[in-house]
Length: 164
Image 1 (cartoon, one colour):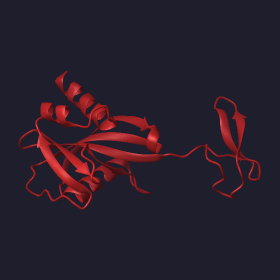
Image 2 (cartoon, rainbow, N blue to C red; image 1 turned 90 degrees about the vertical axis):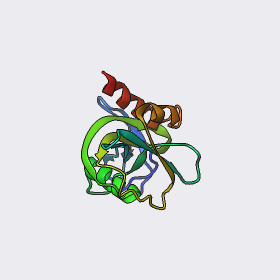
Image 3 (cartoon, rainbow, N blue to C red; image 1 turned 30 degrees about the vertical axis):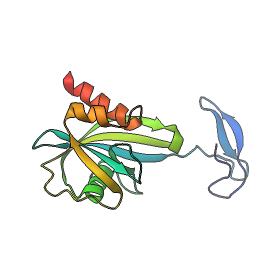
Image 4 (cartoon, rainbow, N blue to C red; image 1 turned 180 degrees about the vertical axis):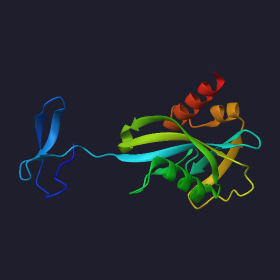
């Protein structure tokens, strides 16, 4: 629970709100202060020319994951997805479709997963956030993505849906 009112700084108390349960409440403002959370996108990037999927490594970590980033103020999810793709890889998305979302407790983030198709990888230029990158066949991507991660759950869901 957040500790202080974002408007006046008063310490919040838990107060019952009908049909909602215990919600942070500011006695000074006489307002409920619903907890906030982050919103981010993750991308299954598919190379249309060879049906390969992009996995990346970042920040000195050995795990292979999906391209991802936080939604900026005023952006919608699709704009964020295409911006993150361009910023991190230099690639331009041809089409984008929503797959699935899931709340990720460790970072208090609603993760929204998309598939983005790119023409090919000829314009690929990794930015400073990417340490290494790999293009894998769908089954290779499934085998190489960081196991038991949210990225793996999104990728596996996408690949399982694609089969049916």
